[in-house]
Image 1 (tube, rainbow, N blue to C red):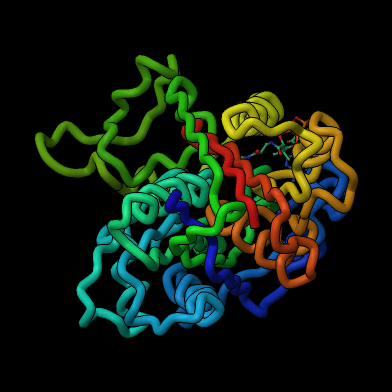
Image 2: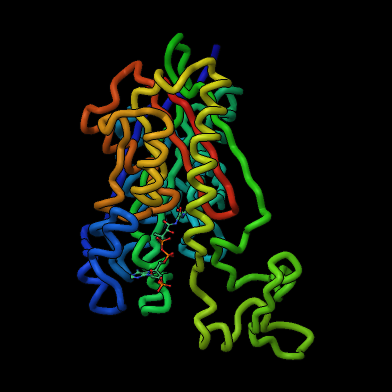
Length: 355
Ligand code: UT7
């Protein structure tokens, strides 16, 4: 049976390290609070004017392409997952293509917007394209430059301290080997609580969704028939252009959905918790990872965590962590690797890979 496998993997994190103590200089927070609640010790920030989400993605992609043993011109499809794109549109996929210097190949580039579960959604899409024989070298990139869009005042501290910049990439290729490749991917969403973790301006909502949230917010719209709904001065003046999150609400659902979607994948693949060799969870919070670890009965060396160094890099967090685990020799040929994520949307998913 034709399956797909991760043929090459790479990651890139910017050089600039920002510690918790660095953040205390601009907002009322502390190293103790951040470490205790999230496990984060430091994160990386890209260099303004020099790095972007797509350029960081390209650096990770170059490594993944080389390790996949192909030339970049052989990539036949691009999937780019991010919530912090270079532009509102066009998407970062075409910018990555340009940065890699492969515009002449005129391959398709797809942008996906599934936030923390973006990489898993992308992997599932790549898997389908490869399994059907449509493409042979799908380049999947998850990258974020959060530092350009966060509120660096005390008002935004509950969100800002968590996020970091970085990129991860894989090349998904066909394999006919009996015991190798992506065994299954499971994808879910529930839009009921879309605004609980969201970045809503600029956007076309015009306050419409208050009927779902029950919360009327003054966005400062004028009475003009056209314009000023997408973005206006009031939104800028009132800090309505930053991400917001109801942390505890998200936390409670995350610890429920992570184990649920992992068990669903295991059941479909005819496997059990004890069969997992390495778990690479989306790096949202060390406490969430620890909870999932306990639920699955895994040892410390069976769960790869790096949120301590990079914070939450959203769509990039799984490929960065997976790449580190592979480079460290913690994932070996034949191992059962489990990926899982939960985040804004809410969207969540899992993947089982026989490495
Ligand atoms: O990747 C996407 C998915 N996201 C997640 O999975 C995130 C899930 N949620 C979480 O990880 C946690 O809820 C957080 C780490 C975001 C927050 O931890 P928490 O233990 O839930 O804290 P909290 O939001 O309940 O806030 C507790 C207190 C509040 O003060 P009061 O009201 O008790 O006086 C906050 O104002 O901590 C305060 N606080 C801070 N204090 C210092 C919030 N942020 C900070 C901060 N520094 N950065």
